[in-house]
Image (tube, rainbow, N blue to C red; front, side, top):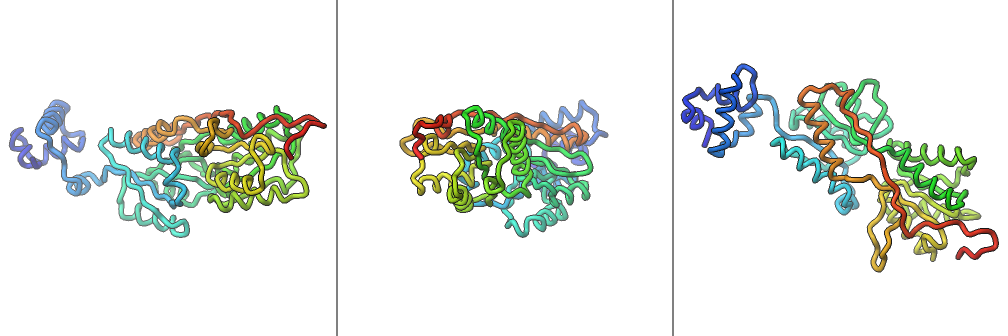
Length: 344
């Protein structure tokens, strides 16, 4: 059934039916309800191109992402995407994912916004100073940031408390007696990495521990760089008794480096991974980890923030900060007392 047929059935003009379906205020509530009920009863679906011309809306939200192979195998990332998709579907909207080369990511934002291909954008992996967010804010284009950044004006964002999560990991290792603790960070231009490193340093400082500069490594978000970072920590004149890896992508390579060195996490060296890792073959206990709980609900929450922003709610009311949790596993242990064997 098309719009003209629906209008003929209701004995209304096509213009009135169109306005009712698109929520225009000049259509009274009784007529709107009558039109919506008839559309549902007869399975009417609006022509999306015509709808865009009439309302200026696409009924879609964009996510521009510089995909790496590890992203598609990350169950947490996929759960977040599923949550966003589910909540938008309830609002009869679609999620459009656009893969962009990292070097051309901002240009992709320019094209999406200038061509009005979507009604809003969800911005992932925010930077400490993020040109994508500055651009969207300057253009007045609706967006929700998955993570925080430095902007002068309020903006909608969803995030986990990265500093608090890292402090949980360091506190556990300190309670186990560790003082010589290494850190492998994602690039510090990424806001989550900067915040997690700050939490790491704050918790150590509170305990009177001042890590040497060579204990603080950074690695790009890929396993090979995580492997090299762990190798650098292990090749120091004395290796740390414990290491925290601030993301589960570099952690894959970091764990590989430990295996290559003949070291067993939880026995020879303690390791905690922010984000955790899947169980390896034969393992029955997971790696010790700081987890960001309920990723599917987190995705739904981001979609709700986006819908609220599109409906005109002020940006300063659309912020959500969730707390990470620490999950003990088999990859960390108390530091052996002096004179006891530690496997090293």
